[in-house]
Image 1 (tube, rainbow, N blue to C red):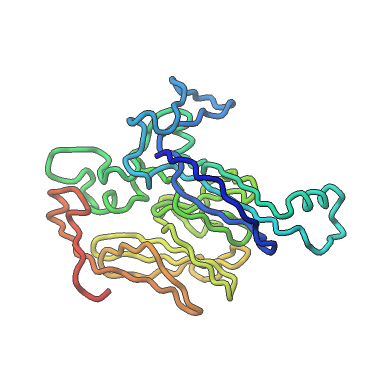
Image 2: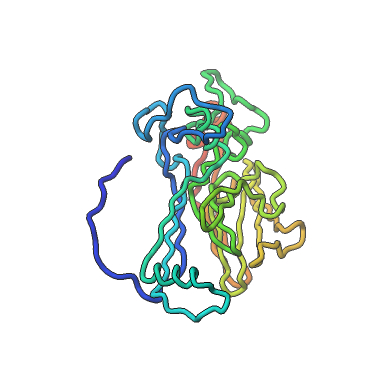
Length: 307
């Protein structure tokens, strides 16, 4: 997955461009490519290999790479209103960064990332397969309920939360999201990982399936997240809303729950002043085909009906 370095460019940063741009994405594609911390009690039997050299430790799809965050801070032209609390060193730092940009890049230290780093090998299957135990026989590994361990990625313990899909900064908090698991909280300056976040305890279950999408209401200064509890007959939509202090603003433990018909596979949404808008495609589930093929892609069909 290596790519050639781009050629040099030229130009100047806009003098009024001030702030930090965060971007998350898959970045490590071989499990355990970094040596464990020096204070780790568990050491890998073999030294780490560079990313991309051992195919047996690589993910089967780039989207399954361990997540990392890129942060670029633009400092502007250095013209600012003097703060009486600024000491001489702080004043000098402001001058030194005038017209420049500062870049940081760090991996998200998820639980799975740390485990594979300590062991120095691949421990999780990611989303490479829909079954945790291969079997040539007819039937499902976990027959009751049919879809819980098959279509709900958040409940399969062999599928790691890579936290590699989106970075969101709001209310002085930096979160990285992944469709199927809890977000991770990071330090917005050092990009160090603080751990998984249950959004102030609003998300009660650690295995709750969260979407990798958030929407910010700039007018009300609020942020919204959602998650889907997917089932074959019906699904539950959980909508979470927080103010600028990351305090839930709704009753019912900070979540609005809506029952949806059928299997709801929703990965994005939009918001207006008073509503959150979701588009649910009409899916038909063939239970018999699911039992025989053991693959969601062969048991689901998109119906030609209005959503």
